[in-house]
Image (tube, rainbow, N blue to C red; front, side, top):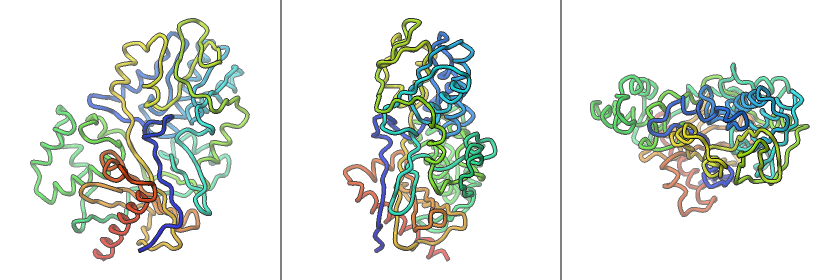
Length: 407
């Protein structure tokens, strides 16, 4: 039995300043709801971030780009002093654009650090990202251009070629099953009902591959059970073939982006008072506010006056996905090596579906597992971080045995 020498287990869903991993579409939710949520309100208030970006939701560059969009709205409104809430990628993007345009701007951040849902830390001898870890949609990723400009080391990960295994025998045809589902499901029905009807019409082997495709291509991406997801979740883009991993951590980018900005740490916000021309947020005063806190936190804020009906409706159709990560480090790499570094484990019920082997990139046997939605309750409830880490190791061992048996 291999014992990890170091581990880290995330708890983003319980983090008061995150309350989940990233945004997703709830039943009847559409990409249009993201656009509506980010509309400029009375020329004084904009909600911004990955949740408001229909082109790149759930992604760091989606947050960054949307922060810049919000800052442009502030410039167009003639803002003189802007209060930016949140020092994640969206907040930093907004603040840098405002600063470049000569507009007075202060960033207030609840945490004792910048970066939001990006967070690099030391695990044993190496740096690991326990939040966002990849530069996705690389060709169109504005943060990737920043990384290139800074000369940061990046390693490509091909998510289209996982080394896969299942607990009930060899698994094939996952990608084909996924594409067939997206084409064949009745989209006039709620997602769970449509998928149930679709599965009922398949042969047993096809149904099995389709269930695993749902676990690996939808649940692990949208991060909620089927009953809590919109049919439109089938079409929101996740990982791609050109994603780049940062062996030195996202902090390399974040620290650069935060440099020179007026950022006030340890300043949680509970109320946004935008009743008058002078906005009041904590002890700060300004004539424009860009709120970039995660969607789960936005729903806890007290807006004075309350948000308009269109924005409240948008919030009702958007939710926070539940996704956690465990990073395990060992003295040696004892699991089979994937040529792409990407592993998938199909089990019933689903547990640690995705694994990323970071060993070659960081120079120490290190692997990260992802778990989402209902599986979190099964694997996390009542367990300490050590127990969760060891349970994840057990799942990795089961995957390794299945790979060995298939070879």
